Length: 434
Image (cartoon, rainbow, N blue to C red):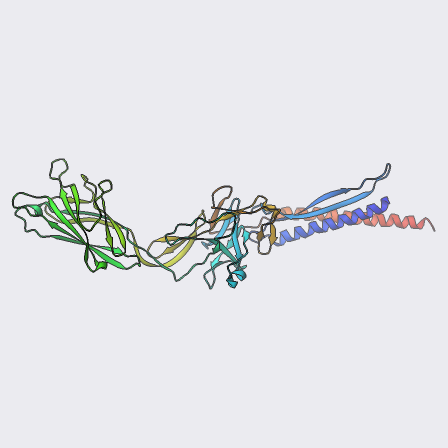
């Protein structure tokens, strides 16, 4: 019985070391595979209770697993959509095959790194056929509220290389000096005109015409102007008319003293120095300066001088590049200098990383052993951040694997030697009968 148990134990040892050799060979073969997680084999002794004075060898049992929570080092690349997770968390991806079906039911897989580039349909896809998933942004670049414990709301990240974008003008800062001599009794009453370009909701160039008409008194000086605003997109219609009164005192001479809405526009806000007029595309805020300050509109000297005109908004531009920041926001950059958030890529986290099911192409799937996943904003909660222009290297340590390979080879040979010894002992037992 004891000799037979020794034989069985050695056979089990051969099988266990063969499993370990398989994981070592897999690790070495994937030493250059981006995102590869090291496989390990653990040995567990088996004990069979024996009677007094005897011992029965039970052998060894092996179990294999993958250390998914063990991360490789990051290396830089030249592709802005090469992504790697620095810290805890995984990128949500799906297969290009499921995206091609277009039934809206794409299985969610998890990965720690990927080299994504737009395919012929514009989807950010890796060479292995994995498509990056994210939450789509609103037209203004904000991300709606999506559930975090389900994949509802996640969509394949799609980039339209022929995409155009523009931003409408909603804010103008106007600074100009009006001639003080134009509001005296001996003035000719010549008005001053100024044209300001703005961009409508469709990216078209329009103009806001600003006319300053001085009030000429019978005697003395009025220090008063009428500001008339006309919109080219509304066929030159008047969209606002204001009476501007300037201070003539020694302390605040030339600064705005009062602004009165006389036709069509929004009331002047002394706290901000702004008025709001409704052009064809919607409300347009104009900052003409606060009362008593030298910013904005002034009345000094004898010359009309536009000082500065600043505005937001841009004309329509073409897409030039895509970038992903540390918080997972996918931004599109245009040749007009603007950028717009179009997606947000969250990071998925589970309680037990090593309980995930291992699939092809360094992807994983949640299981009961791993626990359910939760989608975090990158850099929030327990998750790390997303690094662009980077890939995660294999977690394999070749030197360590070769060392284990030597140990495994010796252990395998030793078990084989035990089998040979048992065979010889049994042969001797057989020879006793002769």
